[in-house]
Length: 255
Image 1 (cartoon, rainbow, N blue to C red):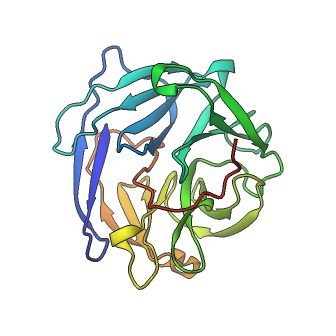
Image 2 (spheres, one colour):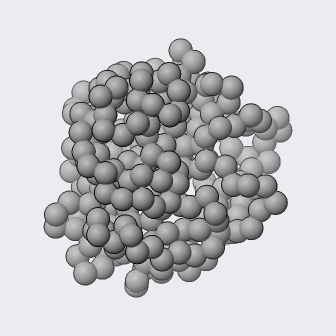
């Protein structure tokens, strides 16, 4: 399913949650271990589903917000049997992928990749930006924007999340600091009209059907506020969290 979360632009609280069922036949993935999601510059969504040790990419050109069914556009499987746990869009609109490497519990073989081809047309060519085998985090499940000292949203360093551990992480070097625990697999920072007291709000998705809300300050990580997500019969899977990225200057290398 694809869940649309509407936020109150006055205080950043959750106004409503709308569930949209993905109806692709055949399905976009059966034995799924992890999901990744990022919003592109035009408001469409790029997603990935981890299937049997490899990732299948898909596109949602017009994400629904009314609870209607949605059929996604399947773009293909990542070449070289790459297993991706996180997708990310930077301030310039370029898309990054977090290669999970050997497994999803260590940083062995972890790499930050960037698309070089027309991925929406099925060209999934990529370049390696950096080797993250020495990263402070064991394994990044989701990449999110960061918040600088002035409370503005930035793309790098960002908030990387590893099974509930949130890091202020430089995605190009792997250096950073663990800030605290919160959520499980999805995290995102929002700016623009949602900035409050000069601090951008931070959202993290919790596996127990909750959306955690915190002001953009590390000390707030221990004081979550939450809103229940839609009930499901099955245990929620490892899902990504995506939203628009406010206008900013990129901290990633050009090329």
